Length: 234
Image (cartoon, rainbow, N blue to C red; front, side, top):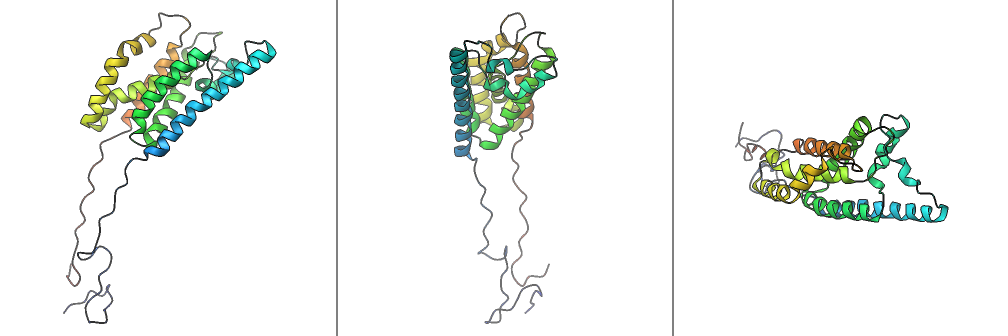
């Protein structure tokens, strides 16, 4: 009998089986997407926007000043306005503006959250940054850009193009349905031929969504490692 010097002898004279040897070895269990934390994060984000808008409305009512928190959005080509990139998605002009963005964020965000917390964080952060940067670079002078619609556009384009990168049938089908439902509205939101709408923020968000989708890829099956039974010489 040959004993692998790496394996100790059992009291019965046989070689003890180490991890990965014999029939008792178990393959690692692959964890599924963390959907619970993703949904909690999504609802907390939307809830934060509502808290901030409520605070802004209270300040406006108490001070009779219409330029309160909303004045801290993105100011194009201004060094002071760069800080507005951080606050832009959290600020809204009125309740109607907030409600429209909230509904879209919850619908589209829920679709993304089904894939886990990592994709949701990725597309949100990237769209947040690219929306603010493009607004700062291309926005008209003397304007202030606010609202989470840049992230909404990031979500739209992420869901639409994600399937081309993951090559999953479900993602392709969902992307097609979202493209049909939001397609005309999305194209209209990207048009510069309108006033009072930050098409620059929408464009930046759309770019961010595509970039985030490009970061996804189809999971490949790990290569099966060759197992050897105890006592077998390799």
